[in-house]
Length: 433
Length: 143
Image 1 (cartoon, one colour):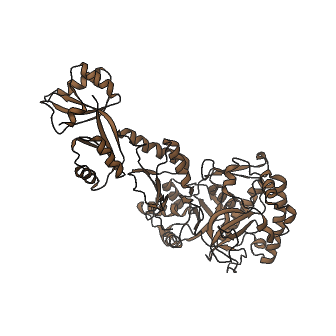
Image 2 (image 1 turned 180 degrees about the vertical axis):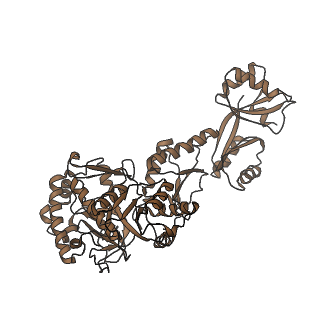
Image 3 (image 1 turned 135 degrees about the vertical axis):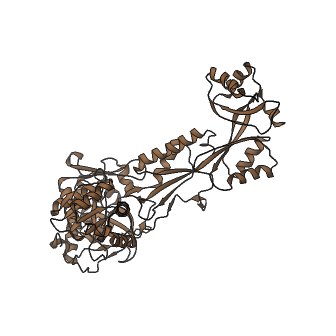
């Protein structure tokens, strides 16, 4: 079923007219409401009247995560904070987290795109959804919740964790749909096997997984183990949360809801658009948001796009799965991790700048593990074991505080972290994604 | 009367202690006393050698993390209750021993132990005033 038939199957020409109209309104809106964008547009020498349609979008300046961080907490809001009815927070590159706000209409928009996503994955009104995305500051839990309410699902707000209880709910309530990170789904499979459950007899017909990169082979594995259709969802809090793009049951890419989130794919070095089908950085303009609309937001995610028709009938362009990043961000258990965060912690602890490395690994069917190797130099070395253990514990605690995920810290000898061209490589990702 | 101890940071991996010891051997540096404290992933090797300055230079050259710490070498009567006598003196003065270990050789009829204190200067005074022999670096190096 298609949630919003009129919009989702709109001929591309009409869609373009809608996008044009919305972009023109948006530029006027941010120019009037946001001191940040007014200044940015003035500096770029662009007046709102220069933007006459979607083809003029490349005249507009980009927005980056750095802009969000530098105007922490509410500086990028186009409306006073009190106009927002909800606020979410995600991790930032260093120091300040990223704060986003929603007006009542923004929440309606979020519900709408999430309802489209759920239908796109195969949900029908009346289905029972087990939502195992985290509820809280993270957008995953509430985004699914709002979409489920909008499209008439029965939602079980399980949130993440408490795996035994999740499995009991699955056995007793027989939910039709599961939403969580793909690695948590595999983790639950292991737990289920240990409990002696036959996963192929599980009740979930549909899985909607996202918030971390995952491969098509992992997708097939999940489908095989749980005997379900596993689909991919894409989003980020800066744009709205989950619900930016969703794979349909034909699995030929993720339908991006471009009537409200206008996508461009650019060469990250030249900032010029790449031809359709070629890999590049995804840039998104939120055409209708009110609290924190963003012009040409650099997602740093590498994808390619197609406008070729999809058998499902939806006309919106489709993105590939995320193929990588243009920065050094990594996603671990649904949490964004930047090496610079680790650097900040280490600098704060001893005032020194030790070499470090993040090693991320995912054992079969297990959650991602993060190990942080820290080279012990003379400044942080002590002959006393208790000092060394305290150092190890302190690094662990502070990093966990910043990242909000568990890590292990390993102290290593100097020069054990590999260096290329004199620079240590900060991240070793051993996961097969 | 303090003695310089060399502490070395070592990862817990096969052959690592051998590599460090053979470096010392090749440089004709003799180990007088040695102990290792370890966790599952790393260890701290502590030792008294006959050429501490040369040993530190050697480790730095090989990118091995090492430092010098002042410790106190104490002669302890080699008989039942010998160590207890020494510890009693320290305990009465509220002096905490961070760790301790023994020398390979004896300086006299007595056993020779290395003590690590927070305040080695004060420890030397406390021990000396109780008539316990604290051995200086010169004597240790001539062992």
